[in-house]
Image (cartoon, rainbow, N blue to C red; front, side, top):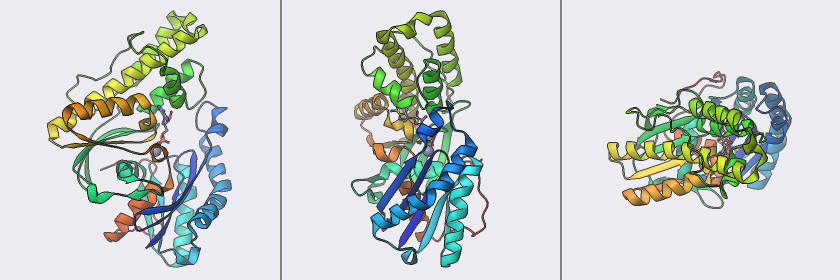
Length: 340
Ligand code: KG4
Ligand code: ZN
């Protein structure tokens, strides 16, 4: 079976060709530089860029995979959640192509695709579901922070989510307060490498709360007050590094502690993590240390598959199609879709 998949939920235009669990191509065109000027994603600009880029990105993906449109057995796209106008571009293009080819369309939940992305690895990326184990999964991105119990493949229950800002949003917004360009997560990661994570003491929101939910807006506010009272910090490179390391340490400690606690409570032996924030080196290393200590197997999404990409959409779509799932050619976009 050969599938074409699109991802256009936010600021990445991506197309991938997937066959038998393998991404034959995975082309990602990032709009990050365009939105950086505005300090965040501008939905209408994002949609316009998707419209401009989707066809060339798709042509490249087909060419790299050495596949022609007539060979496609199905077309998939991220159906939600995401920016409505951005989702519309990928979903409507996928549906139109699937309809014209008389092939099924599969709408994919963006977070569900991230959730299963740690099971994709190698070059070219290939699904590795035969190694699947029941797990507790952390999905951390710019728009979402979820803790999920995955019992069997494609069966999962959300344990907790963020009550306000997502972890990536916290990185991006605190970075903005420090004067860093959007999105600031990767830059905080880089600056934190040479900083002291214990230099400044920031709150660990909901660390000891019995629920599996997260909250990061209070941490962002405490960074705002810290900078109001210590404005000179931003004039000192060493102190900026310490600030980045201290903020990062607060976010990472909460994410890791709550993930490990849920894994222990649910008696799973495996932990997975995915989404853009999983690129963060401190998070990867803290999860590795904690999982080694607890005797858990850890599966981290590969860095190139942490941020938004169509390979994870296509690989999940193929699994669903094999189980007989597909959607109507005029199914609506689902910007506010929740993970079940
Ligand atoms: O999954 P993703 O590409 O898009 C969403 O679905 O949101 O994640 C983007 C998020 C941004 O908030 C970005 O700052 C964050 O991932 N991010 C990082 C790092 N790389 C990307 N956060 C912390 N450390 C990083 N190295
Ligand atoms: Zn994402």
